[in-house]
Length: 258
Image (cartoon, rainbow, N blue to C red; front, side, top):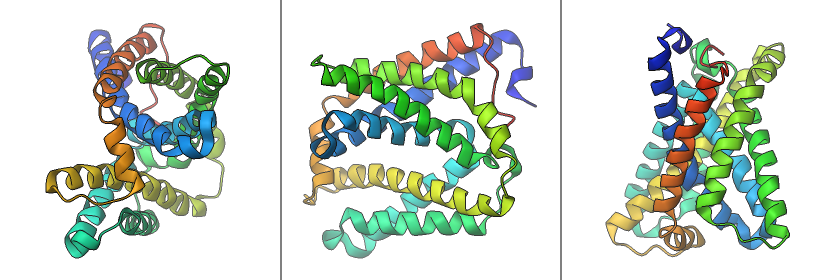
């Protein structure tokens, strides 16, 4: 049964909770990606980070089977690398394995058509809406205004979410006419990218727990952003909750049937 057919009060509650979860996922993704890219891109790192976080958030929101597969691949491949190489392990080992296994998963497994048939279009819309939202933050940053992580996350979760929900159906329906033979490859690429991000999160978590100080820029960024993450996640949850409730109250269509 489509979620859109549930009683109104229950729909409102479910959508609020769902978007709160999306905000919780989006916040650390954006914060870490922005910190990773900032030394290379400067103010444009907002655009790049919001693009990546938007695509991944869209996959979790509306391509759940593919996102779940990517999560399993990311955790499994990273754990394998940590066990096999241990002290000699580097994150690029895990990233390569996650990407390769993710691509192979998309090519070899036929997912149910519901939720995953349009995963390339969904990820593309998420990336483009993220890029548009991130461009606003980059412009504000270039003008010299200071942006806290709390404000940036709240803005991106809400604005990016509204743009995505308002436009994804039209794009998905248009892309539905593309040759189906390209779908496995596109799904594999999306799964591979999401698996790398999930693997990176697991890598940082496992490295912290193990007590082994693995050198590398990635872990340095994780450590430098750790103090900002709690408030950013709280901001993402709050903004997501409000966004989900407003989407329901203003009658934005559910997209779980795509």
